[in-house]
Structures are given as C-alpha cells and as structure tokens.
Length: 172
Image (cartoon, rainbow, N blue to C red):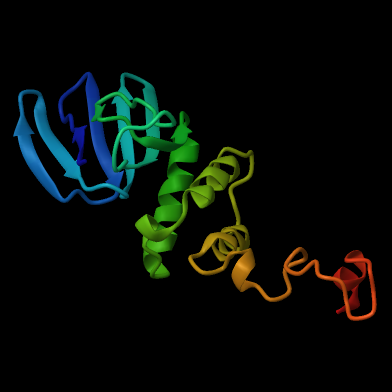
C-alpha cells in the first residue's frame, strides 16, 4: 500500500518533506501530493502560524493496530518521532545530513534507532557525533546481539564440568 503526503506551499499552513524522497508526485485539489512506497522513512514538516511539527515516520505496508494517524498523511503510518520545537527539528536535520554524508540509507536503519534518536534530539544539549555513531553502531543492520560474539548474554551454556551458567559469563 502506498502512502500519500499532502504538500502545502501557501499560508497559513505550510507542509513539506525536508527529509526523504518521494517515488512520485501527483497534483491534488489542495496542491501537490507526494507518494511513497511501503517501508520508507519520511520527515514531514507542518507549519501553521508560529507552530511547527516535524513528524518522522515509516510508511506502512498495510493497516495495523500500532499505526498512527498523521495530519495530511494517508493511510496511517508508523510514527517514530514527533518534534515540536525548531531547535529539535534543526537537530534532526543535522542527523539526516550526517547520515547522507556517511553513506547510511535512512530506509535501512531500524525503527529502534529513530525512537532512541527522538530522546537524544529533545534533550537540552545537542547529541554529539560520538553519541550518534554509537547509536548507529548499535542499530546498524547486522550488528544485533546474534552477530556479536562477546555479547554479555550470548551464550548461557555451562562450561564443561560445571553446572552453573553464570560462570561462563565471566570466564572470558
């Protein structure tokens, strides 16, 4: 199922896609509509007067109970981040810029990364590049606990001759 996102270029409501690229754009009754395939990460910014909202979401493959309604977006999507302050929105923009310069594809990054990023960008201090690198390393494809040989819970089998599994955790 494809997702339609309403774009607005006239006041009082402005809406655009600062992050993500649509597969196609069609003309609608209220202006252009960006269309996305399922599984895409989209940054959708809506400004009305002095208020601003930045929604970061993943387009959904089909309907589901965990999906959220976002104004100007149809059908419901997997909402990963909602930013209500310009400072936090600028920080998200810097993250998207950093991802593009380092060769990361936002669509390939799992949802857990975006959810944790929301906690970082809304803090008082901006996230450091080291914090972003650690977050990416933690959530990069193929870096989960099953592929890490020394993950602290990777092997709970007892050592030969021993009956207690906790001994193996500290043996190495």
